[in-house]
Amino acid sequence: MDASNSAGYEFTNDWFGQNIPIWDQLIPRFSPTKFLEIGSYEGRSTCYLIEKFAVQAPIDIHCIDTWEGGVEHDKSTMSDVERRFDKNIALAQAGTKQPALVTKHKKFSNLALADLIAAGKSLNFDVVYVDGSHQAPDVLTDCVMSFQLLRAGGLMIFDDYIWTMEAMGKQDAFNMPKPAIDAFLNIFQRKMQIVRGAPVYQLYAAKVGA
Image (cartoon, rainbow, N blue to C red; front, side, top):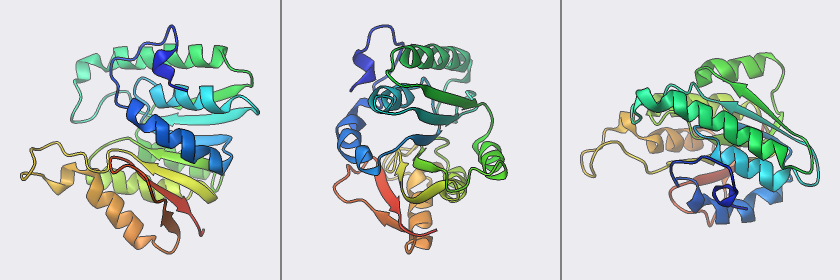
């Protein structure tokens, strides 16, 4: 289901739509009811999860974002982005067959992830979506910390795998998710297995060991 086509939502971009075919096919294999999302913006992916999975059983989604924007955003627009997130999530929740609990963590991801770990949420989530800061040190931190929160057999989704802020041929590895994601998967290669057949702009891996 494509949330962008649902009446009443306010989305100002179509970054997420290209992911829907693979998400439709892939995520249900993991029978998810608990989701962790790092980077929520206007809530388009969150609304998709609510519409898609709050059908047969209640679901629980934790959304982490500062709503201050990253280096690639116009920070003066971010209060409106957060307002749209709140509105869109409320609309999605109002239309579900089963309850969809959405917990909003408005803070830097390293702090929010530390709070979740300290609260005993380790091995609690079926799906983790890493789509926060695009700077390599932040991405690596998000991957390593959220690994502790993903259950064995769960799915980790890495967004913007080949994103770069600079022009092709002039990339700064600091401003690219790919080096961080590659480093994480290389180091955790005995505990993570890449899911084949995924488009290159996102990367998908299943947790096969604690």
